[in-house]
Image (cartoon, rainbow, N blue to C red):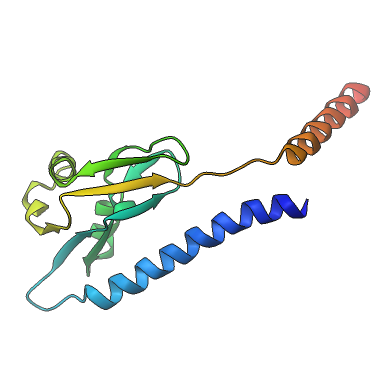
Amino acid sequence: MAKYIKRIFIPIFIIAFMQILSFLYAGYNNRITSKQTLRIKLRPLNLIVGNQIVLGDICDINIQNLEIRKRFSNINIGLAPPPGESIEISLISIKKKIASAGFPKYIAYVIGPKTIRAETAHREIDKAFLREEFARIKTNVLIRANKV
């Protein structure tokens, strides 16, 4: 059980640490001035959790209006690669996705490298954990069969 906890919590800790670092970096480098109301800065390397890539996963969005920030963050970029693999996304394709989502006048505010890399976090499953889960499910099924 301790190995399972280590294998699950270490990747989660790493992901959380990376998110905190990117948040601190974004806050330090992307301060909003009175002249600049919107800035979408792409990060060159990104760690994706889940099966969809959204704009909020791959960039830092700086705007004062929280509702608009949330709408930008939820723009779907595409499917995430299989766990442990990565995909390259071009700046042009990101701008096309933003325009097709209904924000064509904001593509001028998108800055960053010409291509970015998005890697899906992988999760290893221990064989002992699988045996324990299978045994637990099996006993639950047997208990329910005896009750019926």
